[in-house]
Image 1: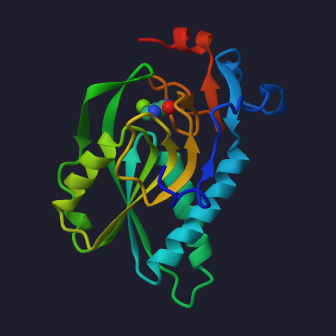
Image 2 (image 1 turned 180 degrees about the vertical axis):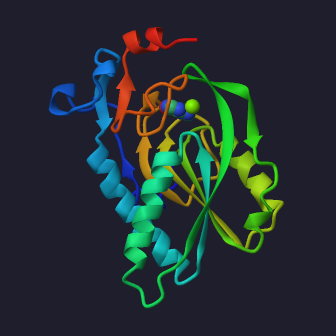
Length: 220
Ligand code: HPA
Ligand code: MG
């Protein structure tokens, strides 16, 4: 792992079992479908404040064009942009933020499929000349991020940075790393905080590990 991250991103150990479910509230319809609370919502929120501070430190007084990667990135993006705006209010000239969206898809059940595609929009000319921050929920193989970066570069933004809430530690994983990472996690399938399993669990606030029952129940 690149040592840029060792003191910045919070690294979760391979043997971290998560917190007992009894310590938290979560929707009744998911009782039995998750095994543990891997990253509680409050911890996510606090980490996002740190990322927002780092982003503002690097950005200086320039304005920010955010490209939110749907669907998984919507919560992270909303909370990150809120935190950037809140912290920039203490500046003499608070920065402006604009958010655009792009939709990608590559997973079926808990496996990456070979064909990842940009569902839309094709035209990203609103990024031209802007300081772009791509906001993603998760980077694992890095293939999606690489493809997206190549696509975004075609529109000649002034700068491009990537923020990912999660980075998975996988063998032969991402070679190009995000500029901002919330948590480095083991190679486990996680859900919640807009991360889905076949479109389920996006409405769970905590990031959780899905149970075998949950996997079977929502399998396609
Ligand atoms: N959970 C949900 N979606 C994902 C994951 C994950 O662990 N990895 C890549 N897409
Ligand atoms: Mg998904």
